[in-house]
Amino acid sequence: MSEVPEVAARRRFGEGPLSRAAALIYTLLVVEGLFLVTAAPGLVALTLLGSDASNVPLAALCALPLGPALSAALYALGRRSTDLTDLRPAAAFWRGYRANAGGVLKIWAPWLAGVAVIGTNLANFAAAGVPGWWAVLLVLVAAAAIVWVANALVITSLFEFRAVDVARLASYFLMRSPKVTLANASLLVVAGGATLLATELLPALLASAFAAALLWNSRPLIAEVTERFTV
Image 1 (tube, rainbow, N blue to C red):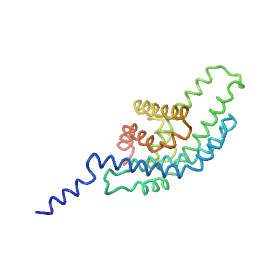
Image 2: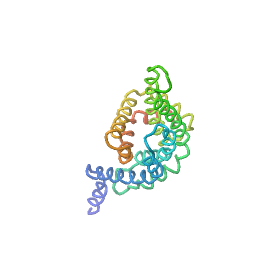
Image 3: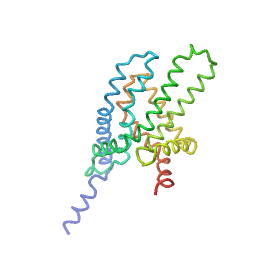
Image 4: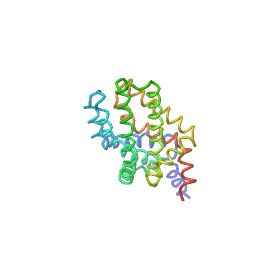
């Protein structure tokens, strides 16, 4: 009979609100550190670039390592355990990085190329001599592309689909889940505002928190993909 309380105590360990909060904070810190390590080459190069419009393509190239790093963060947070006795965020991060890097780059690299083209056009808009409404259209396209890639990163990080299927699903959920789209758009506005008001490195320093918020916003998307598009 004396073993029953001990078993109950072991079961309760790691299941209380303080334990869950501690597990989340620990996971966020570990994932943030690993994100910065894997994204460091691109982040360092970005800080060395000037703000000249001609550097937009180079900035896109420097951002290439951020895609796999963010995908690994999404994977680690999406697969995290709330039990303090079973926390392995570093192992989950590296597992996600190895498994998803190739697939993520098939989405991330073309997206960066497209955004670089839009950014270059906007930066040189005055010299182009085109109507003002064209700039508004480009901004709307860029905004839609950013929300689209957020969907694509969540899908390709947590599920195994071909790149073309990820692209289709990400587009489908832009209209299918307006609440997810608006929530992620708001999150990206916050990230953009933090960049403008503070430093371009601030979103990177808060990458794990942004990834956790992105996963939280995308719960309806994740649930529907799991239910309808996986076996």
